[in-house]
Image (cartoon, rainbow, N blue to C red; front, side):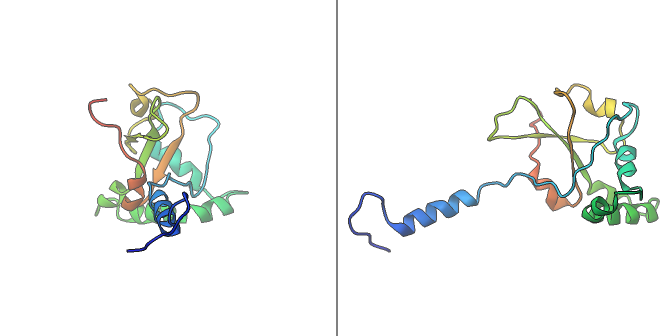
Length: 150
């Protein structure tokens, strides 16, 4: 046990311990890379819209480098498409639920093979939807899902 003498500010080790506890709170997902589409047809699948961002072209080198984890997963999936479907199940597409408290964000999980219209049906979307892509299963922990009863 540490003893503190005098002063109303408390013990410095207590302050350090409280600061450490605050730092351990859930971290918000930080984007690895950002890609935008001016317009996506509502009958296009989410998977086909994502694939368009991995096409080589002028000015794409930096973004493709940042997205190399997803690209390598996509290439493995294309090679093993008929053999193993578990690879694609590790990709998670998430849409932030609107109307939530800032300290309790929740997300809707979207289907990669469903159309944009099907995925957004029944969900509140303000202006332009932002989709978050989690490549690995451990990445998906940053996106708590909306409870079923809401």
